[in-house]
Image (cartoon, rainbow, N blue to C red):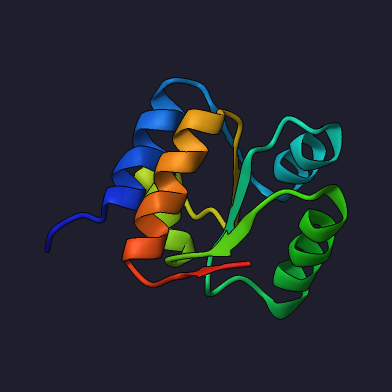
Length: 107
């Protein structure tokens, strides 16, 4: 199975120290204005998806729903991750470019 470009870039951004993951850290960085993109796993709870969708709409941060908790966590070299924030605009733009080509939802 060919690994998605999106997951590759998430891994690269993580190794560069430009991502945070987990509900608390993602929320903190979004509210502080540092998040350039929020990614939430498709298999996250409806409550989690709604919470981040509303928060990102309010703080005007792009959000997308991609992959599942296991693939997001694996891309970051960690356990399951339901949410993550990309803190670098370059990485965020690159991820969004590939998300559009993979026909995923960017809200």
